[in-house]
Length: 373
Image 1 (tube, one colour):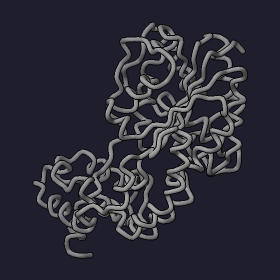
Image 2 (image 1 turned 135 degrees about the vertical axis):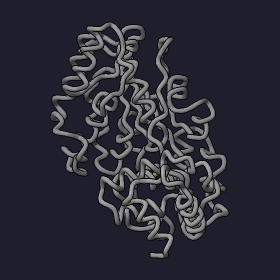
Image 3 (image 1 turned 120 degrees about the vertical axis):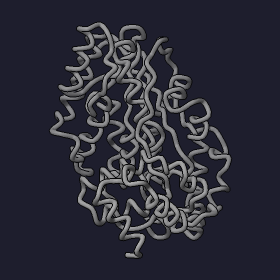
């Protein structure tokens, strides 16, 4: 294999702009390798075919990209976890190659394109610490002789858990509000235990440069793409196409309504209703996320206490203490209880004119909720 100057590995976290960064890297695949010597490698046939078509045309594809074309390394990482005996492949990962075949595909691209840097980008890598820490060593073995940079963005855990809970609605979550015991169940997962997430990487890559970023700082410079380009140790070519905003979220005020939709609607109807809640104009009129309390004071106190040693560890690794300067705000409940925000949001939805309403199954659910059922 040709010598690699550098391998940069983006390991997440979830809900910090990974989809935007993956879109940015994949949309600019040809310009990155041709003008910058930066390879964003594909791992299976669909992605390979798309890149071949771009090379033949001499320009990048500015159209919509499939999941395999946009997020190839999620496919690789999901398959690594599954082969290691971790969680099963999600349904949207359709018959991927074996891990050894995907690793070989990456090596062949390196040998033939001779990049000065390789970028891997998958928020699913944040799960290695919980599912199989040894996978960090396996990933390193794909790149003998390389130097490494590891990039990770972390959110203050109360804000992260609230956002991640909303993400779970995409997968059909329906079992209860985040507050109380539901929130406490996260403490032994990488969605809260950032030490379990990070430590296998520091052990497998002791000589790597680590970029551990506070999500607030990432937003301050413009977002995940801007921060990644600024932080990592390679020069990106000029003229890259910006990534559109990706992975919309529903406001916290809609959470309880969406939970009931997942309980009572058929899956296609529930998915359509979620897309409606993401795009409806009244999303601007409901209580802002910063006002709505989805954890509850009891869970906040419990989580804040449990996070103290984790916070200390992250600060030591990042050489920044405290890592979250506003960590004390984790203990302070927002002023509007979730049930109050949900009721106000329901009233706004029921005032929609007929032309702006969701499809009939969801509309009937809203009427049922208004009647107290």
